[in-house]
Image (cartoon, rainbow, N blue to C red; front, side, top):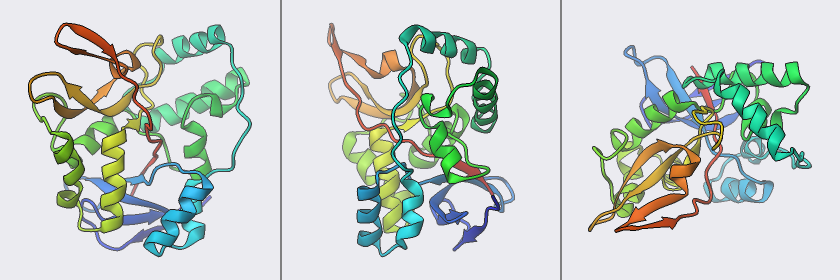
Length: 246
């Protein structure tokens, strides 16, 4: 598939289409001419049509974010554990490398790409698209809040309002805010027990309950300590997005 790039401008936060897929620039190299675009997140058909209508976008473009519903493939827990064990020794922080590595692993073992969350979405978008690894998600976090971890704390209110500072485009503002607030799936896998990682709005317990963006494993995503009590915290709505170089 040939990918065409539609550039309205070339600044961080600018809207950009690649191969008709809507996205935005979140990283530029030193030349300012090349960088990374992140697609808008995966949607169902209903949500995609609502987004198109609300923002006066061509429906066929937004529907690129809504792959056809597929019947879920059931994989036994022990089998999935074995797959993750293998991939933990293969995958890196580089999303583009991981895209090829996972596809090769599936071909070698006669597996459907969809059993690894997000990978079939990147394939649906076309050549060159890949699920971001930790490297790309760190770049997104630096684009959005200036960094990762406790050194860049943000309150929930600040996480929500920050989008207006990183882009003047109202559509992109809404999209990146939802990504930062809900989290973005990674293709990096550090601990096979917990599976693929994610960039999330992580709560740092304390008097002010500060929050920041951090790339974490599932175990850290689902638990936090408040005082001396460890409390389960369900993180819902992690977004599946893809990245493309330009």
